[in-house]
Amino acid sequence: METFIQALIISFREGLEAFIIIAILLKFLSKTNNVILKKSVWHGAFTGVLASLILGIILMAVSSLIGGINTTAKLWESIASFIAVILITTFIIWMIKYGSKIENHVKSKAKLNLSRKGIFLLAMFMVAREGAEIAIFAFAGKYSALPIVIGITLSLGLVALIHYSIVNISLKTIFGITLAYLIIQAGFLLGYSIHEGLSALKSLELITADHPIFIKVFNLSGTLLNHKEGIVGVPLYVLLGWYSKPEWIQFIVQYSFSITLFGYWYTKSRSKDLP
Image (cartoon, rainbow, N blue to C red; front, side, top):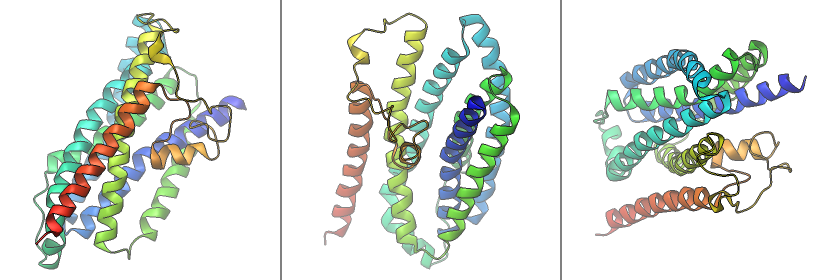
């Protein structure tokens, strides 16, 4: 029963992370007269699912060579998260640079010059990043299919509910929500990439567990704020990039990166408001 609940929580959490990004992208494209690009999002998402299965099999083979499924999963998460940071940051910078022009484009019914390839890759990597980890553990027999399917279905249902509940929200609000969430996610993914990379190096015994780099800022994993299982921690993890036991390097890099992007957004917004 404990394994069932663990698999349910993990699949729900990972599914929620991926699906929220997809939902926000779809809503943004609808509001900016780029409905045709929704196909790129869906194609990217479905490709991400297929890539998850293929990567799961490949990473399973790799795990047999380096001696551990957990280590393989951590290496994958580190690399995939870093790639996702690059894609998301590119999209963020584009949104900040052209944000003031978006409303005029929409009013004139003109389409924004968005990259099909970029939208496709962003959707694909966000789904594959989460899906591959679930696939690794499923193929390894650690989790059965039932709790994984239930968890993913619940996360999809929740995101669909959120997606359709914001149908009448203004473009300006959608733009702000999208940009703020992506900035938070970019910082989180960069910090997460570092954390998982360090964990993998520790598992491979390339860094000792008592190395100063593993010193935590705080450790709230035994509370409701646990980002993996806590009733408060899980939604904070998905929405705000909360981590209940970050290393100093992870904490500093994550929040410095997000604050820098928020600062860039604020500076650009101020310069556009000046006469």
